[in-house]
Amino acid sequence: MPERVETTSPDGVDYGWVMQTTFVLTILIGAPLVAGLSTTVTLPTWGDRVEFAIRVGALVWLLTSITVFVYARRNQR
Image (cartoon, rainbow, N blue to C red; front, side, top):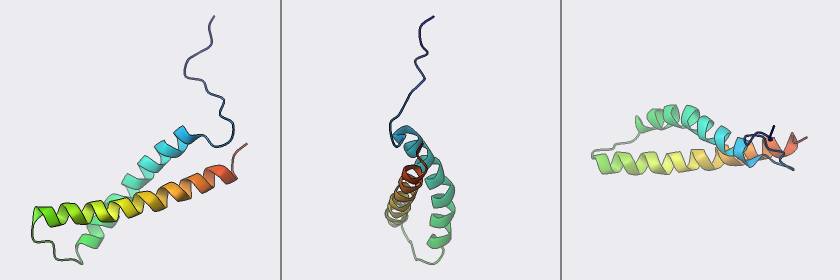
């Protein structure tokens, strides 16, 4: 029987796991954070709201991705 296609044997950091975990954590952390921070800022138009969400979301994504990568690197087998 041939080897299953889904199996991997990553050397070092599993970047697939890092990307998936970053995606999920960014949504779980970022959505409430953007909603909470948007209450402290005046955002009169939809353009302002979108720009605010992108700016805060990008910062959340960057910090989350760095944190997840460092975690994965320290705990690699």
